[in-house]
Length: 599
Ligand SMILES: Cc1cc2nc3c(=O)[nH]c(=O)nc-3n(C[C@H](O)[C@H](O)[C@H](O)COP(=O)(O)OP(=O)(O)OC[C@H]3O[C@@H](n4cnc5c(N)ncnc54)[C@H](O)[C@@H]3O)c2cc1C
Image (cartoon, rainbow, N blue to C red):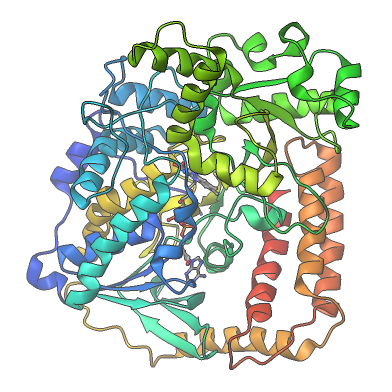
């Protein structure tokens, strides 16, 4: 099959505008006769569903949580980019486009990225209109901060809860349509396969996660907005439920994958503490605005710290190695994530790690506390402030900016980051790879779209911070609503799609067969046993450093874990009830396939 990206002709700056001027439209009366399924109600799916329903289509939405408000998007902390140039520091659509393409190691589709930069400003206006409480400066204007890989401040934020606030905005917009009957919301439903009729996506098979019932749902087009699959590594910063089910299932039905192995390893996560951990926690990149990353300059000091014979605060300035500032003076601590992660691993591999496992570096806020304290003392006309007063004022300001993150760190690590540097280490965070889509966000299956983190479109080999929320909302609020209309304009006479057809029969049968297998297998090992094993192989051999040898070894090892999984997996309980182990078994089987695809 040859891939056609369908990128419009003409100068990059004019493509989207010209495209929108020429596409086919569906008139309001005809929209009422068209159904669209949106699987996933995170920021991408939620914004798409709300907008499509507002336009007049009949939308059905699905999520496996008990409410769209619990999508993984809620975890996003740091912010969302937009080329508003509110700071007057030289930003523009072109610069946002350029930074994103460069940050992605020139592997992104440039036409998509330019469009993303163009609509970025609309996103902020839309969210402000919804009441999203972005941080504001003293004068009441929206505030911005910096993220890695850029030289301007273009990140809009709501303290450390940006994703949550944006999701509440999208959810409110959805709720308006749920109340009007334009969105039918299926909470606690998991899509288990897509149904194609005459080559076009025309529906899904979903499991009601409360009753276990297998259901058929039809539509004229299907949108997949099911997020990323970083949990293939077992430990990641993703929500525990994030999975590859929908992406993998549509792949099996003909939707191509692109760059499956492009995974982002985020530099600032709380280090792993032991073998029984099931989740890793992110410390937002926004902290790198004010935190300085370092390890001891002398290996003896590093060893003493690892053995708890020395405290970081006892190491003098001249004996610290601020290795990012040393190696990358222009960007300093705000280098892109991939660069910061590799540099941390290099220092730890060389023996300079600062916790018992040797897998941590420091993120230190002492200089920022001092700097802000002095500034605050001036602002409040405090003459000759004492050192204690400066520290107090500085800490107060840090609390305003990052309080919830510091509190989260203290709860997990039991150390006070206002007093002693945080320990951080890289961890799996985001999947740039995903389902291949064309300029219209359509996959290689007609009528099957993929948006948000689940697709591969805009971030190349490395996503810059604060640009996932931007992409998800751009896709959902401003791109898909145009492109899907162009496709659906051919469907205005099709009428309702029946679910009582051989195509639905066949896919439902396949889905039930797989569920029956898991329930009846009666093996001896839990799903987590296999998932953990897979995660270990992925991290060690397909993680931050990979080579031909490690990838070949990983392929063999994953195959043997997979063989054992199909023989030995044990799923307690029944199919026709709420059964979390059954859900996990399906997820793990797909992770085992996707893990091998990485290699
Ligand atoms: C800790 C953390 C912090 C982050 N901070 C930022 C940040 O500050 N800025 C930024 O830009 N990005 C950030 N990101 C990345 C960003 O949050 C995600 O990329 C983005 O929210 C993904 O949105 P989404 O709508 O594509 O997917 P999700 O929010 O993951 O939503 C997926 C939806 O699909 C549903 N679903 C999945 N599979 C199925 C299925 N088979 N059947 C039915 N429903 C299904 C789920 O129920 C859910 O509703 C962060 C990520 C993490 C992990």
